[in-house]
Image: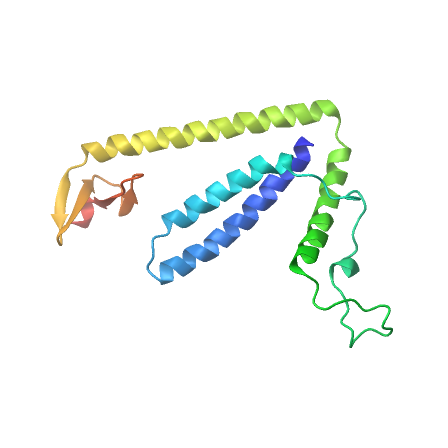
Length: 185
């Protein structure tokens, strides 16, 4: 169970990160703020990972799905009208078939594990997650402390913080501030 959830979380995280990267490029070319793209991707990833154990499994999820079942043959191409189905398949049917195809190897990998290995993986995952959360919190606190110590200057009518080496960047949440390195002046 835990291995399946871990693999699902990693796979979903990679897909969401790829989508966020594409949206980041779109926002960058349109000169829109990008930080909310990544905040949204992070929240969606955490939300999907947290809700994953609450979902019910598909019936017959242990059975493999062939690639042929993922796509339907249109009436004009089918040799026999009995072989044809409605074209195109509904989005829900396509996603259900893809989900079943992805779940099968995950369940097969998880079924080969012993009960103790799942507990060790779960504890390790939790320890690493808490460590990363602590690292992120420490980084945020360090940035806040540094921001307060950097002097404020007016550049082209905009208030900016002058840092010894950091920047150019926008730091801070929920009130972001522009940070410019001293060497830039």
